[in-house]
Length: 193
Image (cartoon, rainbow, N blue to C red; front, top):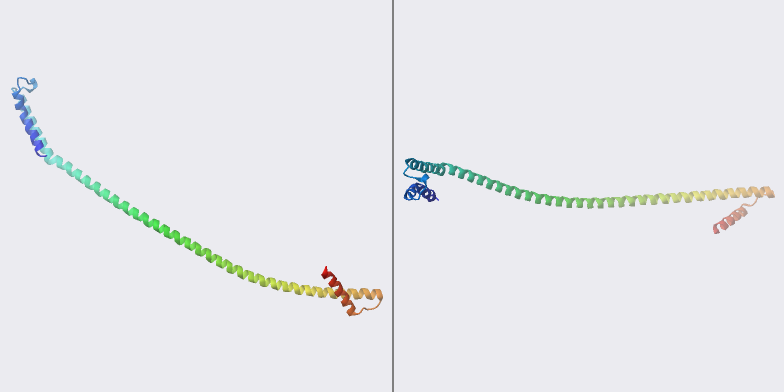
């Protein structure tokens, strides 16, 4: 790579000699008999050589270092981006696992709460049914007692009413056993219907 610029410089320096050799066919602009043209070609070669040396030893190394630094920064940025993507993927996996775990725990808690509520409701229903059965039995006992009391009062009222009616119609007080037998016969007839 270093020989290519040197060869190019040598060929530029030898160009005037080639042009001199072809004077017969040459162009008037390349008339090397003119001292001005020779000095221009020499200065051109010197300026080219100076520019080449300046660029080769100062400009191109600067550009190369900038390009290397840029490539190094790009590689570091790419490595950082890969690391961030890897970390993000791991975080997403952890989040997904945590979400699944939380969902499973929530489902288990819901099932447990539902079962607990069912068992509490069943216990409350059982207790309420037992209390209602007890209240119902007590109410039926009160109703039966009230019914017996009402029948007793009704029989007594029927006995008194029948005794009063018979006493007024016949003028005699009826016998209690006959009144009880008549009332029992009436009750039996109504119970059969």
